Image (cartoon, rainbow, N blue to C red; front, top):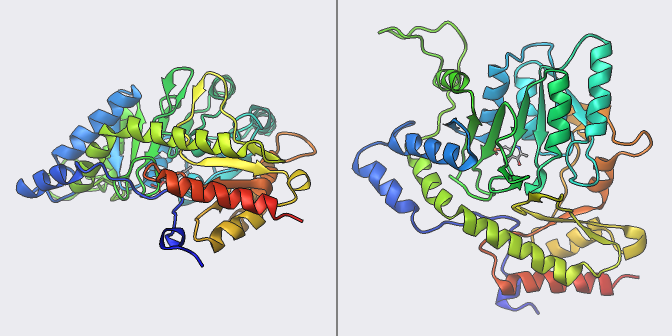
Length: 387
Ligand SMILES: *Cc1c(COP(=O)(O)O)cnc(C)c1O
């Protein structure tokens, strides 16, 4: 028989409110700023830009919208090519399709699980030899860990290709002391309910290029020309963040450092308790980087462990614990069938192995010690019960 607490579902990464959100929402109601845009939006943009060390930011309705705007600002159009990490959520690449462009997927490398500079270099060389370089490269920072930015930026500079840093999962992380999201021509963050801080739904585009972000604001509000009547010369979007949700974001941003600390603590407890299990390897943290450990991810070598990521996920699911496989690489998705893909090694695809062997454990910053011990016990018991 399960006890009441044992039955209670443990989620992978649920929202974690600070208690100060209502103050900003109330203010918006009191002043009747119940609309897209308003003082919370302006303040939230300034606060995020300041936190990341970027010149400006544009708050939008989702991280996906932010990526779409970035591609649009870089004039990615029908028939153009865009390179993108393969091991990521589909939202990284969907905006490439919105623009009628063609994605090319790049494998991960083992040190960060992120875009392989080796795969990227090969893809760039091939593209240069056919005279069709990509219009942009979308680099993802998986589960909070920054990609090898120095190597990737050097290659992209060599070929003069702008980088969009998909930092949806890595707000609060740093790479060589510099905040995640501040590396490319554009950085994007997501404030979806499962991210390290949330506005329930939302995203933001950051950049040092104020002129382009001015254009982002224009495009995100239906591209209205300066005229007393409604006049439009280009196709815009309705992508701006509402003043209510920006209020939630302001309160959340105040506790970001606490949230990062909590997720890192959760990671270290998992590491301490589970790293000795046969075949278990935790997602590494690259030297001179700080991962926010948005999700604790690890791989299980089935031969050594006698259990697999899949059997463990099934067992945790049976115990009402939400664990997930690592993202299914986009080059394996039916949606992107026959899309070009550049693996890290000729003979071995790293992202495919991570998908086979990888598991994400519940990592919410509001998870209790008891809940985490329940998960750890379930994992240990599954290993003990192996045949
Ligand atoms: C969550 C996420 C997004 C998309 O963000 P939304 O706000 O949900 O649109 C993009 N990329 C990655 C890597 C994500 O995890």
